[in-house]
Length: 421
Image 1 (cartoon, rainbow, N blue to C red):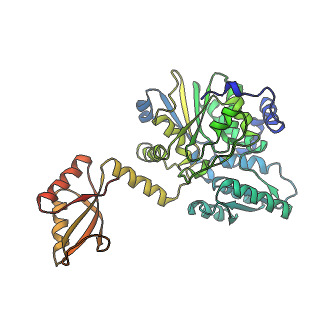
Image 2 (cartoon, rainbow, N blue to C red):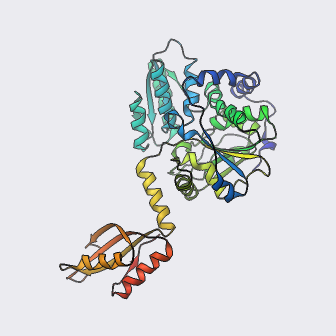
Image 3 (cartoon, helix red, strand yellow):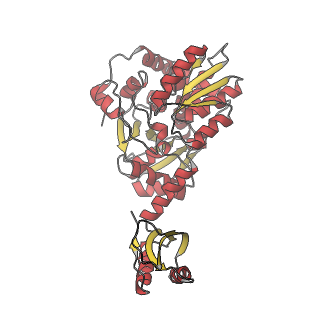
């Protein structure tokens, strides 16, 4: 969906401030500040993605940034303007909180972060490891932002918004400056979008230097307020569902970021949970990169055909974060293995006598299967008094090999029920 028709004639005050400051070169000033702590992250060519999409594709590995995401850029720049305060407070799904806690510790400030009750354990632990005090409160980032505002007002602390702040946006713009420096033929940038701070900053500096370069945003369908907001020309609140892309699950665009996205972003697309899961595994297998759900949204859009590579020049996909809970990563990988036929799940019955299980395992081993899990099941299934049920997870070489294992078991007299999704 192109947004040119909805671009405002005059931006609201906060958005206009960002526009004016980018035009004045303030993003370069922010870069000097940010570079004292943040890394200039790698830009990686991706032959596999290029071949898949038939275009020149590159990956901006911001998942390798300090604290695991781009958020450190905005946090550093914002705190450079904080003077005389002792405490900073934020609401965050995790990445902003980690970055703020890290940056606050560097500046000798106390930090409190409000996070959703169901925030990933790894992200909560990371905030605490950087010295932040975590309050688990509310079901969404929006709830946590409201709680953080109230806490800051009560304590006389500095509230740091995760995206709707000119200093934060200018900090995120430093990523765009790196793209302009590293890519001579930058034709298109694909960016995951939550509240819009990252894409606003990137688009602002990229469009100022190269107006013809396309900037495309990607949201997950479980929480995608921007398409409707851009269609109607005003902010809307999305009724969100649980998502593996928790880092971009923001229910309402910012008052500052929405006008900036309207002005600078060429297109906004939406991907599904399944497409994000596939992209996470693809990045792990092909690029050896651990990327969280929100960070993989851009690759998901390209792989699913929502975004086409530029006809000429390079398309850069931003991998915005890598802070994924190990349990979720394992679940996503197991799902992929099953869908690809490399992980077979079966139920069968065996004799509840000595040697019954051993005989079954020998049959599977003879067929070349590798058993990774075997569970006895005696409840909720119909069994003879001398039988027991067995659920198996088996690694295979692929779908045909899985079919051969099933056929071998059936030929040996076992009644097999596949548990594949």
